Image (cartoon, rainbow over all chains, first blue to last red):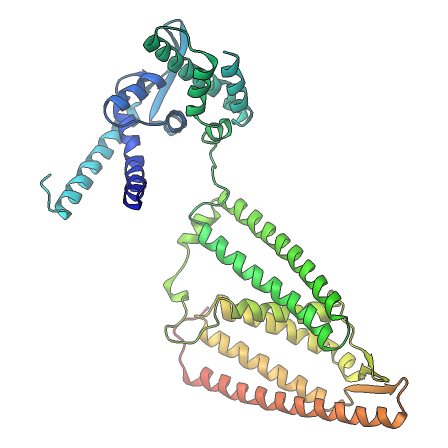
Length: 113
Length: 320
């Protein structure tokens, strides 16, 4: 892979890493379990490795942003996650921040937001 | 699904014990979902190779499990610059101590070159490994406590050295510390190096002046070590450094004067040489030491004058 592509890929991964939390919190406004959450993110153009998603869900739950419960679905026990009340508040704040960052970046790059 | 069970068992061994069952159950669900989705697409059951491919894509068990731990780095990016600096400093100090303990016996003729050199290398390797291990352990503990965050916040730009003022470099100061440390350890008998010399039919031993003044010499070497540390770690304490430096130089002046008044500093006796040869050698060696002491006295005097001038003429920008 040429250096430019390699560098682009590295920077792209860095850029997306911070955005994934926002994507996960957004997707969990509706209750989902891991597999369907991953499908939702992939369909939206933000694929995430399973190895990264599950620890992230645990961390967000520990931080009080998600709630979870084990429930049977299609003859199997699954852990369902949902955005908590605190999570909703924080997501709203993060989305505002996100929009402000996007507007600033557009402005600095001479693009219309 | 024997392969899946083996995989999950391997993940489980590295998971945090309190949550291991819960996490394993969730991972099993995810992997089974993936298998079922693939089976639906293909319209048949998956074979061993296809299941193996899914597990491989999921990641190495230890990597998957480690992501569930609170601490995933032994030394994180916040602490790393200080860790690297500490490693460099410790390495230079350790090497300086070893260098002197290897070179000094060679210069005084107390040791065979190859033996002393190979032993020095062997000791250097061990000393560095132990020093690095201790520093790494200390920083790993710091990483797991709030100490680094507090330390990173608690600094003041006023503590920085004055711009344009020559300051000891990152190698020079640790080397000075290593040299002082070597001298201190040698005086305390921790590093055994003989003070007697036997050769060319003569036996040379230190005079009584050195043992009479052992206490003050030891105190002065320890004080010099402390001063070098202050000078290096707190360069902005200009007036305190000038004051301590002057006091130290005054102490050195007093000690050199006491030493100069208590010759002979070397006692030369004949082993196979004649008594006349021993007497002449003794006179020569003591004359050389007298000249060295006179030079040291002049140098210390000049340093004292410069130190006092700095203390009086240059106002301090900061105080400790």
